[in-house]
Image (cartoon, rainbow, N blue to C red):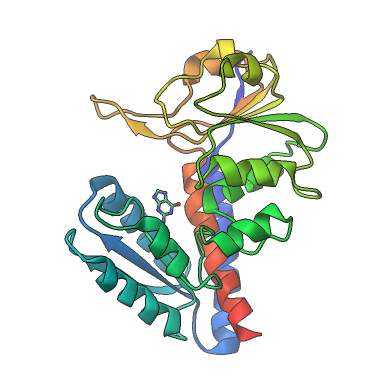
Length: 287
Ligand code: GUN
């Protein structure tokens, strides 16, 4: 039996259609639309594609926004000054500084300079802390998208064994917090990382395996308990141009009960969640 393939594109399209309705109502009632400003420094090719996709989705949702494109040699104080301007602009509800930043810039200092009430990425320490305490405000978009996908697919997490491969600030860490959180995931949650001696043995315990290790086509059927749900957060471009995840899809799909593809799994949900967070930021600013 082949695993059911979880269609993230369809779920994300539904999320975005629902959001467009809410945005239309917001605009009618308040007289303006939620606004997301994106800052892109330099010419990292993948980042340029991601930023373009965010722009397209934002426009389709009927939201306002601007992309601030800065040269690769921008100085720390110049970038910080732009962030300060956006913090103080009452028309801007969400701010996203696209990562990675050029190596000469201190990314952590920039993320901490963003007003936490406009931090729609959920990367500011205040928002990470609120999530860790079970009082989430802005949750990072990729793990939030994974939780929404699981819910939409009717995949329960309560009392299950969840294993997260990867401990990054963007995915692995917030993912594990959401899965473990009371009333949100309620799963018994384990994180594996580069110092885990035998991650495959741990992964094989999982009812729900979240793969966010950032290594192309690494997790095959041997890592998966028969009947597990596999969520692949990785995305990599092979030399022949093919996009692949951290999971060897064909192999894993023979053992899993449900699996996300790459592309078309988690990725489309990420952008939908970013726009949702921006809408929530605009609503919160009204109060
Ligand atoms: N680069 C890759 N993913 C992300 C993300 O979710 N947010 C930002 N700001 N940069 C990224």
